Amino acid sequence: MNYHDRQPVWILCDNARRVANFIGATPDRKNPLRVRINNIIESQDMQKSILLIDDNEEIVSLLTGFFQSQDFIVHTAFDGTSGIEKTRRLLPDIITLDFNMPGMNGVEVYDELHQHPETAGIPIIFFSSTLLGIIKRMVTDNPRVQFLKKPCDPRDIERCVRELLTLPKLAPPPPPPPGNR
Image (cartoon, rainbow, N blue to C red; front, side, top):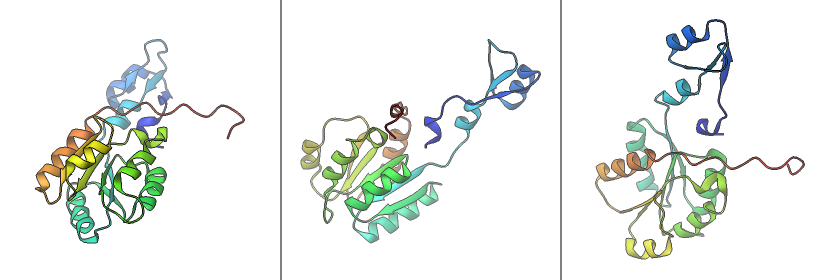
């Protein structure tokens, strides 16, 4: 579970308003003994994770080094099928996705991820040597998707990632009804 998906976290304590001021939390206006600490958790510069889905090991190696230098946790997948599996398991903050890969192409991976509520809101950067116009026509218009042509300046990649990470997180999917687990 991503930390953005959690319900409000409250602590009970005496003198909650003073504790809240001391630790930078939010006191509960209705209950003077409760302090909401979510904003402390969420305001921390938590390391972001990125999943690189690309069959070109050299590109993956270069991007891995670049994103690690930007303090990202980097995960990799070298084909679409393992990219989908890792996305579902890891729920990364952002994905870079190649178009031409063995097995499934990038648009097929994108379509599969967008069929599931838990992965549909993850921002994606199509990073490909294929003509971007072709890919754009195959992908439904989505503000959480950007396109970059290989090769490109690392500053362009960083700009796209930072822009997409500033988008608000989408609401998590509702829990399954009882008895359907």
